[in-house]
Amino acid sequence: MINSEKFDDSSQKEEFTFDEGYANEPRKGGGIISKILIGVLAITTGFVGYHAYSLREQKDKNEIELNEQKEQIIKELSALKTSYDKAVEENKTTNQDLIDARNKVSMYIDSLKTMKMSMASLTKYRNQVFTLTKERERLLAINDSLRRSNALIRQERDSVAGALQTTVSYADSLVQQNTKLRKVVESGEELQINKLTTEAVKERSSGRLVETSRSKAADKIRVCFTVAANRIAKSGTRHFYIQLVDPNGITLGENGTTSVGDNTVNYSVATRFIYENKNIDVCDFVSKSGDKFEKGTYRVVVFDDKLKSIGETEFSLK
Image (tube, rainbow, N blue to C red; front, side, top):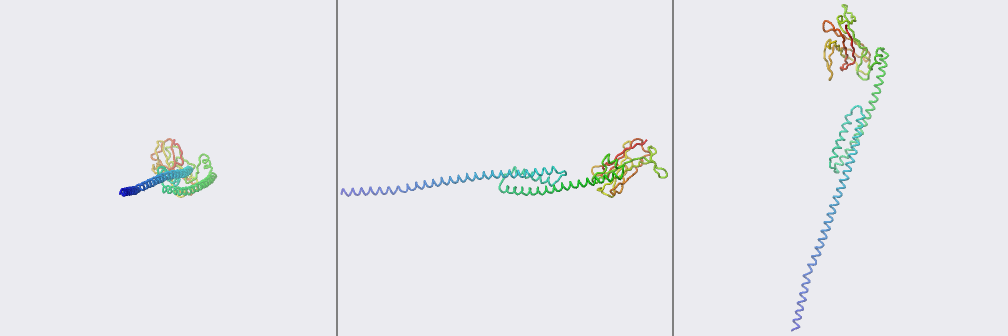
């Protein structure tokens, strides 16, 4: 009986030990899983952090590269502007196309300096640089052609002016003397006059005019001049204006007024003649306004149809 109790106690101990060991197994498995989860979380966190760092580093590199390319585009645009500056400066006549193109380049430079760059905007401006470069080549080629044409035109004009001067010099000795004092014949369409003379005349009952230097005897003032030949001037009907001013500063004759642009002239008589690109003598008369002409010095000025003074002289009456 004693042995039986011992046996039972031993069995109970063994049963207790087995149950206790079985109960402890889940605890060991849970710890391993927790460690695995923590490890996975740490790896994931590290990967995410590294990926974020890599993305930020790549973004910084991209921004640096974009800014470098932006500065390169600005340099190329600045070079374009410099070439336009040089072309505009070398041009004796203003070329509006060159000025407009230069202003457009300046606008792009100013816009680029303040713009935050992206690949899209970089591509846009890179394409624009290419377009502007082609436009510059086209405009500069046109400008160079115009400069050569202008040089050729100036050369031909000078040649015509030289031939014209020689012809006029041989045709009239007085014109030759006047040419030595001043350039009568100039290139272009402007007309010049030579041999400007004035004289007071008295009209006889027969109609014959006799020169006089006495103010009381004079009936009219005769003004004569020669319009010089000019091959490239406009031919046809032309108008000149003669202004006769007495010693008191009064414009005699018609005392009319005419204007061209900003120029206004008081004239004594408007004379008309047919110009055929060769020398032509022109005379006209200014009658006295009152009973007689005043004593003293009179001034005569001849204006062309653009109201430019082309001849002036003085004479005196006793």
